[in-house]
Length: 173
Image 1 (cartoon, rainbow, N blue to C red):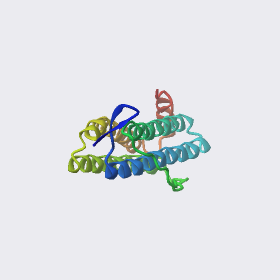
Image 2 (cartoon, rainbow, N blue to C red):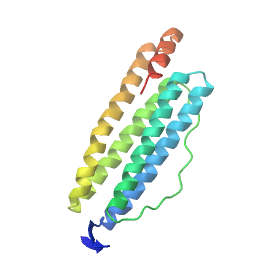
Image 3 (cartoon, one colour):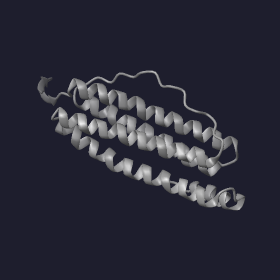
């Protein structure tokens, strides 16, 4: 539906899509909060390279939230922020932490897929185009996390190898 606002045509966002995208903003901010929690854990255990990787991941998740925020407003919608749950703050092993990252990224992929399905049901083509970027992004996010999980499984508890992986992850741009 289009409306005339200050003599400009604006393609208004569907109310179901608006509600779902607001929920996704919350999910993206939670992701940032989770990754920041992981960074604090990693910093406290001496894995500063991995902590840096997580801090950059947290920043990226906030950027994702802002993409949804901006999209909602570009379609004459309203952003509604809700409570963010507290994330986990400790892990038994590095492997468990990065398996949690992978599992979380799979969950986010599922959320994005649900948004795509809703956009299709609502014939909201602008939202479908917008969500294509997130589909591609989630493929990269899952692959990146799984690569680290696979490396940690291979390295096991080798302190020199974990040191090298920590250094490698510190170079994330």
